[in-house]
Amino acid sequence: MAHGISCHFEDDGRFAFLVGEPATAAWDGVLPEGFTQVVLPAGRYACFTVVGPASGVPDAGRHIYGCWLPRADVQRGEGPDWEVTDVRASAFPDRLHVQIFIPVR
Image 1: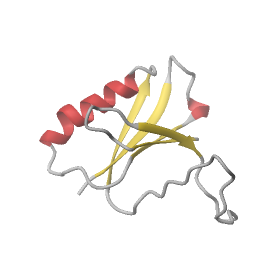
Image 2: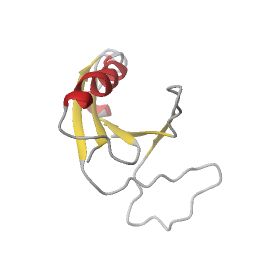
Image 3: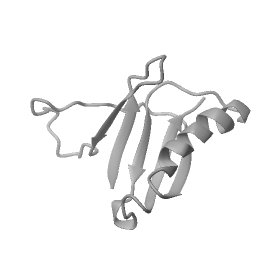
Image 4: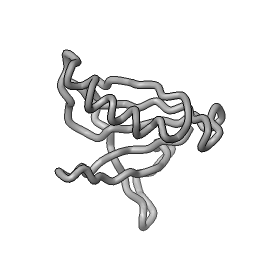
């Protein structure tokens, strides 16, 4: 699995996208120089599955924020969006299998 986190959102639509791995129980808490730690807050998340070409992932994000969220009975919560790509079930760029998680309250 490949993990990605969208964070540091700007008013003009820009944001940072970090790719990484979850920390394991054996991790000693010390990051090598140049690495960044992001802690995902516990809470409630809406989960969306995207299966298809790579272009479908940003399209899904536009649908989530432009259509689904304004009509849903929830509000966006605090914290970053994150996604998990099943790289074994994916063939970039023609077919990705991605789950997108958005904090909600």
